[in-house]
Length: 352
Ligand code: FES
Ligand SMILES: [Fe+2]
Image (tube, rainbow, N blue to C red):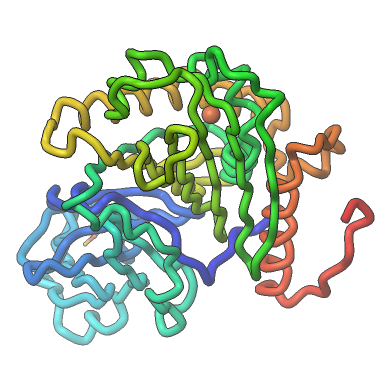
């Protein structure tokens, strides 16, 4: 299935652009990202039109990238602004594709369609990254050899937590949890209510809840947006109190296709306690990275290996369980949008 073009994908964390440039394949396109001297991010095709070498093998010269082979230089719009060994007439012909980019909520977003259609207001809200006075955040990246929609499926079906991450629900009665799924426009919500969540004294301390009962209330609510951008709002609080009196850890899971069978998994996590302790931020990042690399990642990669080069999991006729409702809904939305973009008739699938 082709990739959706007219949508925002995460291309990098804002901090990654402290480097002179970042080279990354997105939706099969080689792209090089950099930051102009005025701070604005830029993204251009990572391929010199002269000998087709990656521009990222060159170097930054002011607000341009100079090709490392014969010196053509390109600015952040993709215009060739210097052809040192030729006359200026070639410059106009040498321009390459420039992409619309936006910096929002500490991520760099790229619009893979026509730049004129890119509207940063369409980027889903991850405002918690900006609430620095009340929420401390970590950000990270994991590469996964799996189609991006497999990762969305994983995040929209939190029934996997009990088995793949048993330490998370240790002591809790998972059967007591309830899940509600709903669609609002092109957004899917999967709300997990943990009516009785077990939390021992050590965890209470870790989450800043102080002394108290081991049985608390909790939630793990996911919001999915096109193309695979998820906000997971996790919280725990004492029975009889409000969520605002508890511990909250909002999470971002931002999945960008690299190729049909590999993905960039950008993630971030916030917390509402011990805001000024950088070691806690580092520890949170290390834990997340370890979980994705050693637990979710191997499962998703095994799924992709079984599918071979195929990208549409539903074509393989899997058994659909109740917990798949949100994932299937998200896949339907993607399928409809991709077909609509391609100008095809949208057919109702028998499974709908
Ligand atoms: S290959 Fe880039 S200038 Fe020749
Ligand atoms: Fe997981």
